[in-house]
Each structure stands twice: as structure tokens, then as C-alpha cells.
Length: 203
Image 1 (tube, one colour):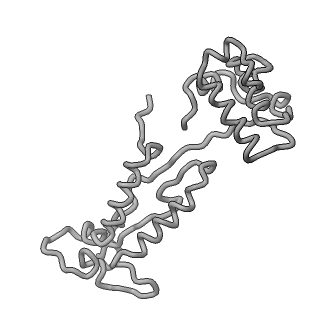
Image 2: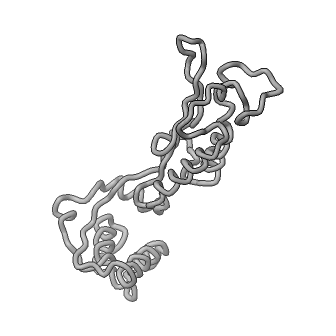
Image 3: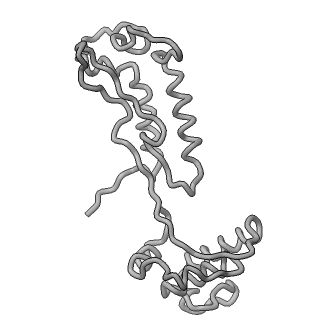
């Protein structure tokens, strides 16, 4: 999630802050971050002053950048009265598919299953963009020719492309989801252009 590998490694090795460390209050984001880096052994106490970083901290470029970012938030956005530290784990998630056929019912007809919103995918909450993406996906889904709000189209499952008869003979399962293929394709494109959704093999 964008954290330097060294920071992730020592965080996993040291674990979360104790009640004593986690309960400490600092007067700025920089001070709180400096205290946590010192707890993890990545810097020395007192490194909150970026103009006088200790030799061990000065040799790690990302620490200086991280402290500078926290300092910018202190000055331009936050201006906090009190700051404490805690770790929160978050991740991207995504479904393998958003359109798939359901088993045939008693009538013998297949129906499509379409998932949207959190059931389809999402981003870590701190990024603040998941809801915007969901609204965009619902808007795109609503524009499919097969979607007619408030109406029941009994022929939609036997047509491809929202009303155009197919020139090809498709199995019943594929025929039921064909009108929604554009939504599936859009979903695939979204996953491919967002690094966080690109799954990595775990060992």
C-alpha cells in the first residue's frame, strides 16, 4: 500500500504499539510520526526536527520525505491540538467476475447475476474514493440497453446487445449474460488500470 518495505518489515517484527506507546499524545503529526519511527528503531528520539536529523535517519531518504509530508499536513491542513499513533491495515478487494449466469430454475431458463458496489470491489477506506467509483459503476450499468428501470423485459435474456438478435447460436448460460458483457468489460478495464487491484501471488 505504498509503504516502504523497510517500514513494513520492522512494523511486522515489532508489532503494534503497546498501550503505553499508543496512549502517548504529541503536539503535531511530525512528533507523533517521529516517536513511532523511533519505537521501530528506524530513527532516534528527537528526529522530529527535520533540519537536525540524526545521521542514522539522514541516511534513509524516505524517512525525511515522510516527515516532510507530515509536516506539510501539520502546517496546511490539520493544525492538530493533540496526536496519537495507531496502525490500521487496509487493502483493495475485487471479485473475479461481476457478471455470471445462475443455474437454470424450475422453468429451465437461466438468469444473470450482476454484482455492484462493495460486492464487486473496493479500495482502502482512507483513500476516500470507493463511493465515487461505485456511483460511476452504477451510472454506467444503468446505461446498458438491457436495463429498463421499473419495467420487466421478458425478452432481454434471449437477445444480445439490448434488443438486437444475435447472429450466433449461444448456449443458454452465455445468452443470459450477453446483454451485460459491456459492464463486465468495463470492470475488467478498471481492474487493469488500477495497480492496487492487480493481484499478486502469495507464497
